[in-house]
Length: 271
Ligand SMILES: Nc1ncnc2c1ncn2[C@@H]1O[C@H](COP(=O)(O)OP(=O)(O)OP(=O)(O)O)[C@@H](O)[C@H]1O
Image (cartoon, rainbow, N blue to C red):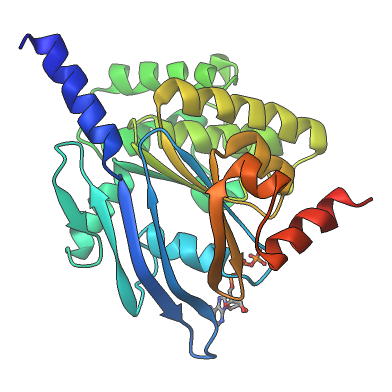
């Protein structure tokens, strides 16, 4: 077998195996609320939307998945690029941090939670690259400028601080900061929340193109079904901490089976 066919075989083998396998995930806060017995898989190149009304457990689930909040029960098994697997809460905190710094990305709803607002845009991007061991200033600077252009920010703004950017630009900078290490899996928490409708549309368009171009797997939390329809291949519907329905996005939005999904969809579609 030549090198190309081996690579192709590896690619197909990798894409057939889940990137993340979530089993029986349970996290209760002291007040008894949280998430209960959630199980699903995510595959390479797939955008998985998590929808549900406020308080249904979307953020709690995302925090558990992204290594920020340890569940009381269940497991989250991540498949690394070499196809070996790790249970992310059975490994050390240090290993989890390494995953968060390179293999994974996390886009917060509020750019100020994911950016350092008092250092330049270039430093915000370069910093994440430095954490992977790249130190050469020229390389860091060039990579920062390239990624600014990639997210449609004029590269001449490389030395400007995010505080001088609009909300939409800050969000695009946050995305560039994450993408610079070529993550395989991105977690996004309401990435277009709080932006004007026209700014949202541009960001959604950019995200859709980047995700397809880079073959990223994305876990996207959103309460906005229009955002979910535009970006997600598959949807999980959460209610009161439980996963009540999962399936292809069009299937769930056009023909929801669970009464709660039907309510969720009809409350958006009915003027
Ligand atoms: N730190 C916490 N301590 C106690 N209860 C919490 C905490 N965080 C969330 N909860 C509760 O857990 C449940 C799930 O909350 P979560 O924030 O995950 O929902 P959500 O679907 O993300 O809501 P929203 O869309 O409003 O962000 C809710 O009942 C919430 O009140």
